[in-house]
Length: 109
Image 1 (tube, rainbow, N blue to C red):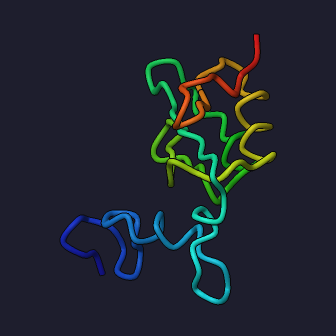
Image 2 (image 1 turned 30 degrees about the horizontal axis):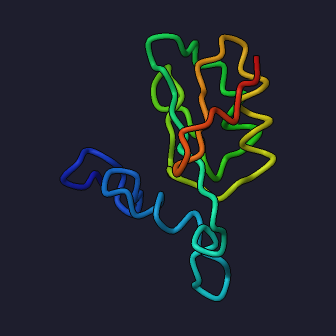
């Protein structure tokens, strides 16, 4: 059965609840607030080819919806898997930036 957003019942992607709960530890605390530095994660959907490599590398942050990559949660705490996903994107569609400084974290030139 589909919900009001056309998603299967129990699928929280339409409301973003899955995005918010993806960073909760088992005890319910938000893992992203334990770090002073946060990374903004973006995907240029005009460039993305939907290979799914990002979702395979860091499924807690990325998914594939239709034929394009999708950021499940941003900003995020620094995470080497997310950096790896951005660095390994075949078409450099993923960008990570420090939320406070705007410094580009990945991909590196």
